[in-house]
Length: 164
Image (cartoon, rainbow, N blue to C red; front, side):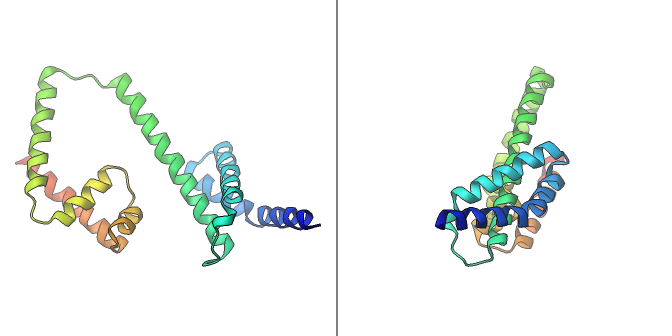
């Protein structure tokens, strides 16, 4: 009897949230098959991690966050795969280009090491590593807008510095 109730509850959760979760994944990927796969992954993760749900928010909110994280992880892995394969196939450098790249890297390293505002540097380095503004704001415990502004300012400063 308890198992039947649990299965009924799982089916209700699935039916209630399926279209919303799949819609999110389709918006992220623009591919129906991938959206379907990610939706299934989301429900598997939710079922596996159900004991960790703490009732601080609605279950649907918790499930949506799992879906969002699943989609972001997929996109991040896809981007890394695309960058790796593209760089292997299409990117060859001449010795002159390598020298320019090393010089630019040295300038960049010196600039970041000597920058007066270390908070900006840390924010920018996290962004370079692929963290989103939301993740940066959570890691540094600052508002998301502040993270976004710091990254923007550092990009502008670095562009100006490297063009000199």
